[in-house]
Picture 1 (cartoon, helix red, strand yellow):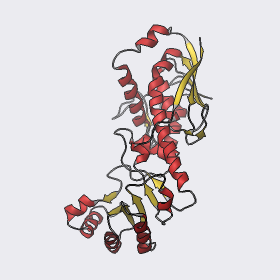
Picture 2: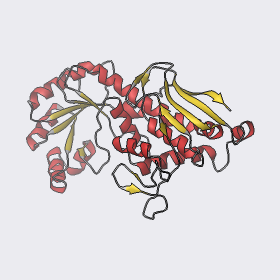
Picture 3: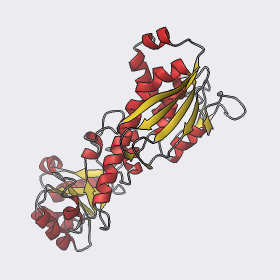
Picture 4: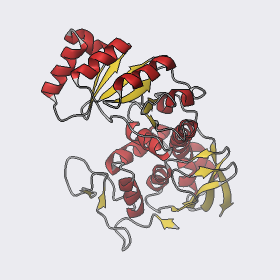
Length: 330
């Protein structure tokens, strides 16, 4: 069982760690302050490479959006302020769960004066069955009900991303191909959505425009040629990973001649993907992208490409149905 406890108490030191390992402490000054969140949540966020400050901002903003500067009118009218209760978050459909520490953080933020106790019934990345509880929350009932929708919005979305990712991963199982995401993420949710992809067994592509280079058709047009664009990026950022998008086999040849070690095959027919694999002959890693479908994933993987880039993992994943059931009040 994990307990939120009281920030600053013997089991809850005020300083916690963010994803970069640096301490954050309420009231200590600095560019960015976060509450002294429960140490168990902080450690789980850090283990997931999720920056605590960013996740606190996300959860806090989502709660604030739901309250809109006011109160939860329905809960305030029907639930005594001092009433306690216990609720379970239950999967209504089978899938892969992701985002439990984020959901727990929402419940903790909503009940910080008298923190709710949390007990995880599953771990992120677990396959769960319909009817399976994934989290139990015990504490101030009003806070639990106020936080319900915000916690579920995040948990069901991230679990949906993980579930869809796992379907793609299963589809190419037994081949060397890996499933990768893209930058087609919802604004403000990139870190947690890409975490959910990892929970589903997928890989992350670049997190931002600054940590890797990807030469696309518009860059080629601006530079005058693929070769010129490649040389310009290498001269500006020699140490960064560099991927080149190719629309034709002729461009694949040009990219290989320029020295590319990672090539994106954009909207290639399956036969042309296989031809590109033969052309590369192991000199470059190849990534299939554009127009990919779950039904056709295995045929693409069997061409010998190294990656399948799937934007749908984050921009089109249906939410996994998870609900909150009140199991005890008073």
